[in-house]
Image (cartoon, rainbow, N blue to C red; front, side):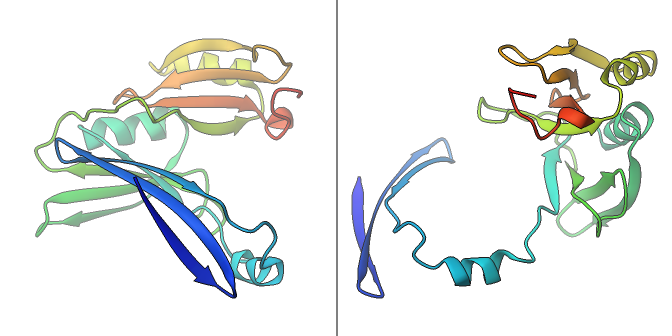
Length: 184
């Protein structure tokens, strides 16, 4: 474990970093003690135009994944790009124009059919107007609902879970409760 002092405007920030290399994989844990509210004005200016653009998922069968996200989840294929030099294809899908909200990027590395997902990935969350009808529609379209709709444990927010063709989990949250958390 290395501790690196960093000086900025007469403040010292102690950052402890550890990196463990195992089978070409990096596990990085970081502990930092940053001054609270040190630069509130500049943070506001820096963050004012930030937004999440997309979430990338590596897939083993791009056509099957595009079919799932368009036919089962109701998204639109917004664009698709192939890179012949580096042998990969990207597909961007969403519920509207990329300029209006975050989308999903599906990455297919040519010739790679399966990925180790590890235990760090949780899920993507999608707000829906009627969680019960949405799950019925997903099942009718051949989708797999792994957790039937109902209240979250310890709360009243209604959620459900769906699994995509590559095993990635998608949480559905009743729209009127999407920002309520466990209290909903």
